[in-house]
Image (cartoon, rainbow, N blue to C red; front, side, top):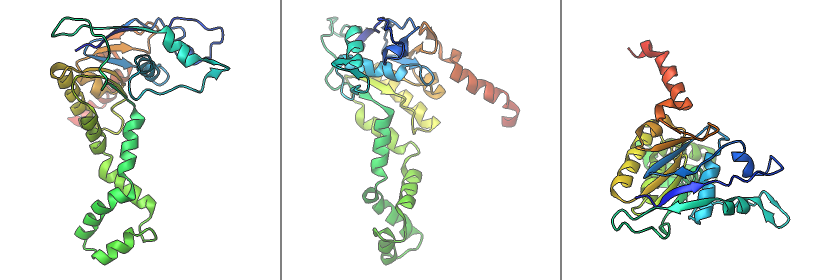
Length: 272
């Protein structure tokens, strides 16, 4: 399902070249971006891919959007002005053929820091204590010893508990579970670097789930990523924001992907 058909970025030129977010797209002929069921914004740091996602979320009033308050002069909010100057077109319902009138209410903008926040929550002492107690029991500790160790003034420091949490939960387990809980049918999702905290195997697994949801569950995804594992697995249209024209590219043409290829190609004999 294609809820958002196209998005046009403001082409207004400001006298001051440093005003955000105008400066992000200065010198680029950005758009209009025409979307498919899955569309990727690729680019290195500073390319504008995360800014673009947030502008879309702000323009469409999607849950998870961030308010930009850092670039306000007097009564002028340049972020609000920029978003107001952008334009968009909605798609047609594939089943009825009628124009879509609004983005689904359960649509969501998911940022990498949202996932990291969930990981940190699970690292708290009260969440970890039961699991840690179980592991200490397996090591032969008595319940009395464990209670003393886990007490606020016990022998295990908060840093040690956090380290335990990172080892226990942050290898993609919590991050992948977060996406399983958040993603639902019939919605538009903007995902900013969903590969954060995911192992390569889980990145591929998530990308395959996204492919299935786009094909069978009437979902649309616009994703900012530079992960070669996501790029190579997603059935996506890819815009390269590193290029002045933000051109559409194949995944195997992208700089980050080529770097991985050249790196392993130069060491091919070590795998034989």
